[in-house]
Image (cartoon, rainbow, N blue to C red; front, side):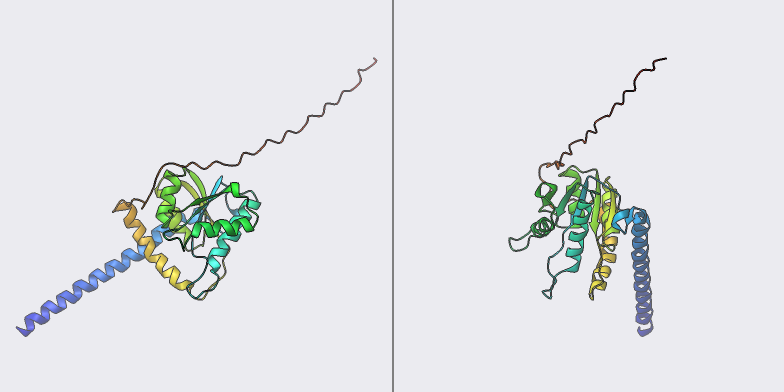
Length: 240
């Protein structure tokens, strides 16, 4: 009896070990797949970022849990304001979480960018960007975007671009100016898991956004054409 239980225990442990090994393999391969298929769409310096009519800025908290200014938030705002100033994008879609009256990511982004000199008519807020997937699905279906430049940190861009292109959008990414933080490793580890979950959302569960609503196409600021006067030079006719 004891030997039989021992054999079953060994088989169970071997099965669990095989499942863990398979899960680890899928975890690594899933991350490599997302990173490998999106690398060519990511630009790390603003002068290299490919221009687009609209830049999509992903929301995050204005403050950290310890009560300090969130460097990731301010990096996204600085980069987005520079993209507008250098005319690499002509409009910004600010998409974030607004589930409660006390927490409003799009409004915080709007205020910060407006203080940086971005005109109000070049800013649109999306209050239902509860996740990266929701932001991109709403950008396509609600704000009617087919092309966009995504603005966020380098560790977030591969997943964002992967989702956007899986949804049929022509998106590229511009890395937000980055400064290393002490707890950034937690965000990166969470992002590894999120990339694998994204594969399931797209290929297995056919995830749908939390909320869509009616279409609200973004109206881009019209640019007046610059008309250069033509100078005609009349030469006197020859007297020959």
